[in-house]
Length: 232
Image (cartoon, rainbow, N blue to C red; front, side, top):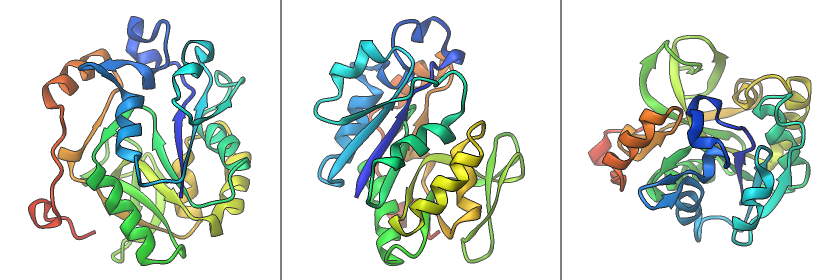
């Protein structure tokens, strides 16, 4: 399993907070988002690639042995192109993490265990609990198979998932044809199952207020299946 962290954007909604560093390298309660993700990935993946673009020079030496992919046209395209660039150099199953989330080892294990259950036949996408229509959403059928993605009612994307090596080439073709879009568009177009990630095991940094909220919530608590009531 190869992890990809998408960290190329400038995080424009963060204002002055990202004046000199990408959002993934912001300090949150003494540690960067990137450092927190690295800790979660420890012993769970064989290699890590980080896609960098904005302020590349300020953080490329902070990767601690991870591979760097430089996305020079980061301001011209969306994260579909970020992921495509990363997949180009990887021949493996890929655990994808948005660079602006914090999650728990248990949440990552839920993704990987679900992926192993299907032996690579399906991709896996992490979703937050509950149906909503305020954000782009993942829609699934009664069996948990993804059937749609977009500005629709459905599960909010949790910023993490697994793309199977079996579906890598199909995913790359879709991403190449939709470089101005967000990468979750690949999920309804390739065989994908959902995993619900408890909200207690997930936070996302989009605006300056989110930093204060994150400091109040960290460290995140890992729940068991029985505690969360999550059966997918």
